[in-house]
Image (tube, rainbow, N blue to C red; front, side, top):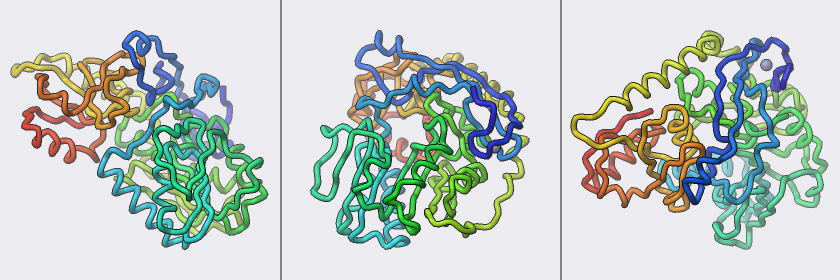
Length: 383
Ligand SMILES: [Zn+2]
């Protein structure tokens, strides 16, 4: 139970939405039975009246153990590949990442680290407890460690640090950042790049499927900046990316004034925070009504995307018959809590589906094109 805001330390906390959900939205199971018995956890959403930070007040990190079954790789989507490649090029040119040593904390399969290192003379060191060498092509410029990064790895030179989609999982993010700041091999000009989901996108634009047990924190640009400054970092850049869904922050260890202007709390964020409980229920009710109405053309509903959004959608709403995903590692597996099968796009020809529910608007055109190529006629709805 948390009594103070994990970002700014304020005690001005307000309880909001609550639900029970599978603790892992990114672990799919080999059998339906196992999937139905997946561990569940309780979520008590709470927001800070001072910095707008949103978090799960009763988060229990001991329920979460990241193993090789954990798969958050988005690299099967062309749109995401373009995003990752552009981001890597931006970081390489901004920070002159050539012949450098780069550490990635929470590297997953190492795809992004490879983009940063390959052809640039950089040496990459990837840390992830869920790292699985069977899924990665080895390269002499990449070294992987199936463990957490900490000061015991002080022998690795630290020119640049990358940490994407990790901070929102950590139950004490301030302490996590303070410990990093104190790693002796980090120099005053060592730059760190962090990326987290944009909590405002989930709150304001009602991306309610983004509320998942694995995420303790839902950052907005203000709370993200505040926590880095409290931990002693100097902020070099802070921006939204990927259609507003991500927040990116670049900081350096050296102290001093941050480079960016003072950010005021998003004007409508407070209203949106106080209204989230009602709009969350409304959105789920709307989808339940829609999916319980039989379609006159026959066929059921399928969810396209068996990532955390798709798994959350079927958990909150129900009503879908199966999910579709491009990632072969997910196909033939079952969703936690709900036990629905994940199928490949190739298996769709023999199914009658009234509509595909697309979980991420960014992928809508990609999916429409995929269905057209296969000659499948079905409507597409964006969740
Ligand atoms: Zn706060």
